[in-house]
Length: 465
Image 1 (cartoon, rainbow, N blue to C red):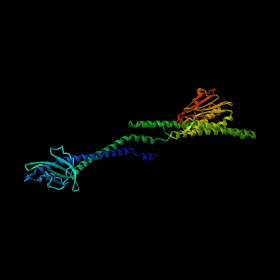
Image 2 (image 1 turned 60 degrees about the vertical axis):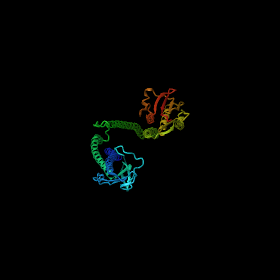
Image 3 (image 1 turned 135 degrees about the vertical axis):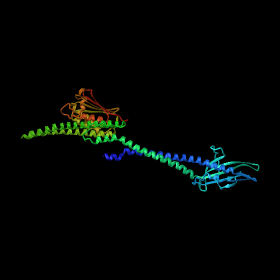
Image 4 (image 1 turned 180 degrees about the vertical axis):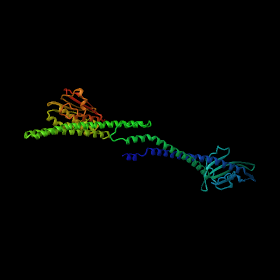
């Protein structure tokens, strides 16, 4: 059983580590993305400065001759990228009329609305574009030309493929992930040892429980546990105490039931043996009649004991949500009709006062048992010519009143104890069963003096609106 529970619930240690690993993975993904974009931003800043320096170097080589602008592109203008062979460089020089005078054709122009950069003191714009099927980063630098025969703005464009920038950003991201991975692995190892140390008190507690004998229900030893686990140990001890009390009550009940059965069985056996010694048929008949009466009493006692077992099962069903919505007036009406012949045979008038439905949530078998025991108890104590009244009223109150001798006030609490008898004929279980059913339904039961000095039993249920 323990192994199946452990398999279904999983390991607490591995669950905590798995949650930590998931958290670290999320952090690593977020940190990796952040590192990549930060690296890309740093790469753009560094390489944009180099692009602008190349454009400025090219602009310094512009010259005008015979009304024509020419560009002398020094090698140093492109040599700044020589150390990085990951990408390619393209440039283009246009005169004041946007005619190509040097460089590559069809290098993309700045998109409309591209703002001028504020990072450098130059008429420069940076933008991303596509050239020859490649992603490129381009700078467009405007160079003022003021000559007697020419006046306007020349444009120098320098573009670089983005492999170097991507490689730099990926390098920064990889370095960040590597550092985070090492830190994460160290954190997982530290958490593993910390969890193992924290779970040692639970292991000691488990050992203390497993080493116990099946009938040992003493409180668990006060092992050293963390503050968060102390309520668990206290709850287990409280549950063990209640379980021990339940077993003690069951053992006492079994002992009382055995005593109640043993006495009439011994009397029946003695009566049968006495009858067998007599040669007279009349004595045999008298013995058989006595045995039949004793058997009826024992059958009634056995039925009462079975009723107590049904009460426990019904109480468990109610606790597990098996209660139904019932009309107490209808239940009382049906049971009153069923017990009317018994009342008539005893010369007792059985009356029902229930005009409107009274709804509650309960277990119908137990409620029928409660009504049956209350009515049967009232009929048994009411003399011929008396009255038994069954009332059902709002909000959810049941009353059974009789004209019998009643119960003295000092005994009204004791009659709900099992096997407590006020007279020799009873089993001492009728009102005990009623009390158990009331507890199962969270109902309050009380005994009062009736209008004719008899007994009035009142049960107050929780109404179902």
